[in-house]
Length: 183
Image (tube, rainbow, N blue to C red):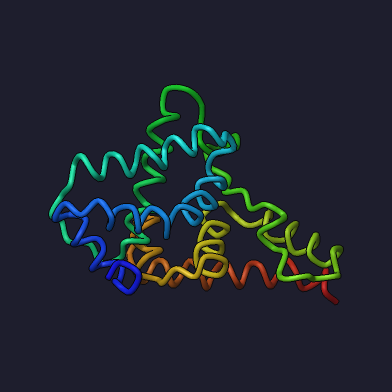
């Protein structure tokens, strides 16, 4: 049953006390959580601990709160857990002089298949890294992780329409930056 269950069915089963359902969610989402968390935190051991703590906390503090997207809920929960773990130590993300956080995208994020044109990839990465942090984050979540607007809205705690507008704005900014490089 677990292999064919939807995320919501697994979630509901887990809330009812099914350890296997929680294990299935962990297996399904660990790599996504790890990749997303690595954009916020460079310390692998802290990241791994936060992911494990997240699932342990879910098990011990089961809530009957209905959720629309398990993926978005887990991403948002991990983000808060990482922020909380670094609150007293150091920032989870880089902060510039104006207090804006940088959402760093790694070079690997842009490698698509076996793309042979590494110079073009480097230029794309440089262009994306010129975008503001929120625009980089929304591009990463929407394009590279395939989250829906609703899921992004939940993860970034933004209104649905704001998410759509922010993505549109990010893509327009990206096109302006990349246009001179491409031509």
